[in-house]
Length: 32
Image 1 (cartoon, rainbow, N blue to C red):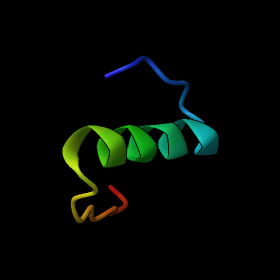
Image 2: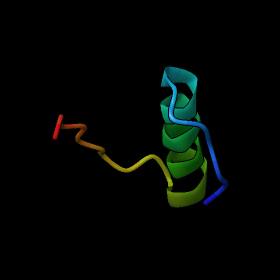
Image 3: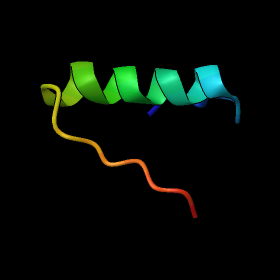
């Protein structure tokens, strides 16, 4: 997983990486 900044566009990058690398699985985003 590439290193991404802790920013909204960093989260977008993580989700796009998951989509392209793992075939667009369902992802649930929860606050901690």
